[in-house]
Image 1 (cartoon, rainbow, N blue to C red):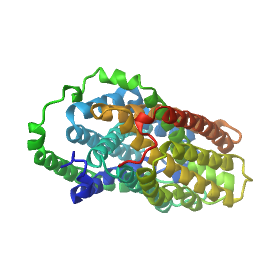
Image 2 (cartoon, helix red, strand yellow):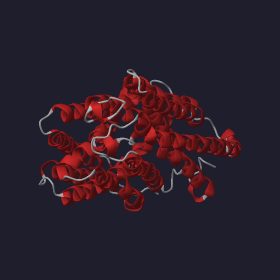
Image 3 (cartoon, rainbow, N blue to C red):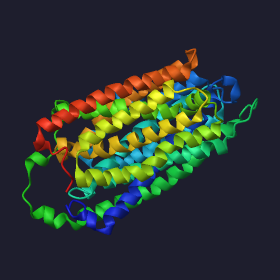
Image 4 (cartoon, rainbow, N blue to C red):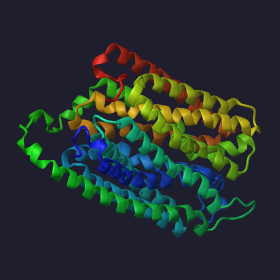
Length: 443
């Protein structure tokens, strides 16, 4: 059933999607739980935990360490060799375990808390990325031949609600108070909520595994009667074929440049928006929460647009332009005027919806199914290499530059310029290779 081109007409496909989005919601929440209260780490004396801006930047960059140093590639291969259910379960469990270590480190307050949290966030990051790869691969399986872009857009939208939830909830859990030294329990409150979400995600992942296994069993008779296609069997040499695919590198570069300008920005949103526009932490939380809230509405709508009208590479170019305009406003608009911050979030929110809605459904068009998990993982690997670097650089710039927020935003502007250049090259590739059907509707 799950492999049928018409499976998206059956309620089971949408139930499977509903189960898949909850672990991703929990992952996005936990990853962004400090984004709107990053001011806590501007000075080590503000918390009993004792982290400063550079330490927080190190912690944030830890998400990508294992991903970059081979973990994502290995995880993607395991997805193609062992299947989504077994491999996905291993890495969803790793995600939850890593989050648990981070919470333990935050509550300990020991001198080694940063090191322990760094280890935890490394495990959490690798688990989250492979879990995300498993989710994306599963959606491609269940919705192939149907509204794949819509399904992926819905998954992104609901997952990013986790970010919105974190951005809005964290300032309420840890309220800003002048001259107050935040206790370990206060600092860890967002992580406590995150672990509750992780527990729910684990339960619903188990439901999906059972549903997916049942779907495969119900289609086993048909698959057994079909002749075996040897070229459908994954081989390790297929990884070299992916690495030699020019379109893979274009999508990977677009992904790392575009996402770094947004995800790294969110990590330091409070430390950037509060001084730039002279607003309190609660207002900064609401301002940056416009990003995930906008995707809840527009990511599915743009997914429908890509499914029905095509023109995916054009939407990638437009999204990169909108992100560039947003960061230009954040960097150089008049200081102390919140209007410019809100306007920038509008542009960034549209871009954050457009590019993924067109980018991720393009991946199954450039590679065969047997290496789809590996390809997604390799793209995430390239993405995490950039995220690890730019998060760390952002933390250093904020801590050591005379005008940290403007310096960091200038870096994001340059990333957006590069992302736009790559999107234009990919659009040209689509025009030269119509057989890839990159700009055709998903039918």
